[in-house]
Image 1 (cartoon, one colour):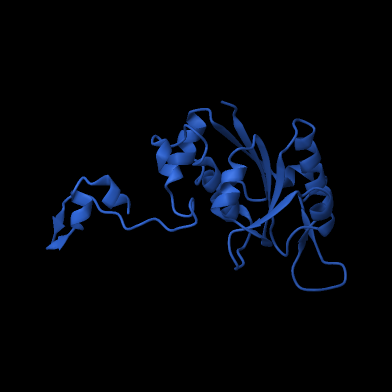
Image 2 (tube, helix red, strand yellow; image 1 turned 135 degrees about the horizontal axis):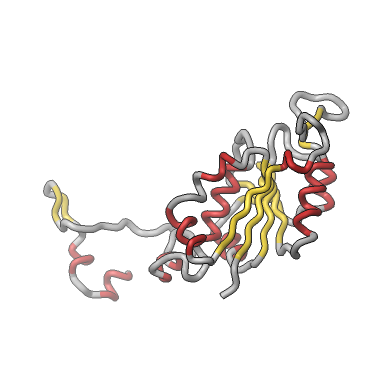
Length: 208
C-alpha cells in the first residue's frame, strides 16, 4: 500500500496543527498511511519583513497574496516529486462532494494552497493550480480550515485508516443518499423505543 503525501502551503501553519494531531488523521499518520507536511509561505520570500501580500493593481479593498513567494514554494515542492493535483481552496472553486473525495483518496501526492486576504495572484491560478475546491458558498478568513476539511474527507477513505473498512463505504452520500436514522443501547429510553424491525434480526427487512 503506497503512502499518500499531502503538502500544504499556508501563512498560518499553526492553525492546522491541531486538526492533524488527533482522531482519525492522527491514526492514519501513525499507521504510515499518510504524511502531511505544512510549509510556511513566509519562508519563501526574500523580503526582510517576510511580506507575502501586496495591494491590488487597479485598486480595490483588500490585499492579494503575491505570485513570487507562491511560485517559489510550489516550484520547490515540484522539484522533489510529481503531484497528481495542485489544489487551491477557493470560495469560487468546485463544490466538494463525496464523489470528489473518493477520487482524491486514490491519489499519491497532493499539494494544497491556502489562500488569504483577497486571494492569490491570478497568474498562480492560471499556471500552477490543477483544481480549485470550495467547501461551501460562504467566505472564510483563509483556506486553512477548508484544507483541514478536505484532508479529513480524503484521509478517512484510505484503506486501513478506519478500523471498519465498511464504515466509509456506507457513509452518507456514497450512494447519493443520506444515511438512515441510527440507534444503540438501550432499546427503550425514557419510554422511547427503537423500531421493532431493527431488533428483529431480519436483515432483508432491516435493509429495506
